[in-house]
Image (cartoon, rainbow, N blue to C red; front, side):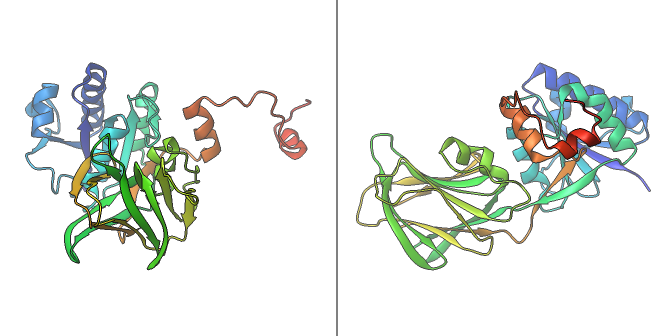
Length: 311
């Protein structure tokens, strides 16, 4: 059976272009068909017939992940989020190689490309399901937009000089009214992204929950909240004000929100699949990505005995 990998690249970065070309050569060298968006192949200066097997070019993003065992993404978290948009319907798991900054969604760094290719060739990887958000926008009771988010759906003010007035709701009941710069509804995966910057909690990926975090809210009760994964969150823009808002999903897809708009956020029926190469604890990922100091840590006596430590 033919093996096939979708290759997606941040072609605006020279380093990413070099890594992508190396990956295409290595994968086809092991008999794996590499599928590349035609636009990206042009930017990468790839000649399909120069590879054996030849590269597959696709002109449309929709369905690009069909029949691919995974999508190999060369870039930062923004490129990985774009890959999630492309592959979500096909259920193709996404493997990110980080050439960005923090790169929390990436599983490998650019120094690990050779070992990453080996893991793909030898099928030494697993796919992990991540909770995603189903996001719906209503105007006058009518559904006008339906989309999804892996990290977060944020309702924000459209004008810098003006706050928005919102009422937030959990499970069909009103909770509080805020004059604020915005509200972030996030997943555990997105807890280290916008949610983190807004002062929300870091939630381990194994925890199933939804998060709601106000941004610069002028209210007595305006604290980050963690609710059940079965809950439905809602944000309503007060109709009697003239403050307009905008909905951003994963910082990539925007929807204008007039006063009176209602945004509902719930757990999506379809999760996002991310490839894992290592079983490293999430704690270690936090320490590495944020450069956290753990100097002085000794660990339990039992752990030290297992590791043969005499400290």
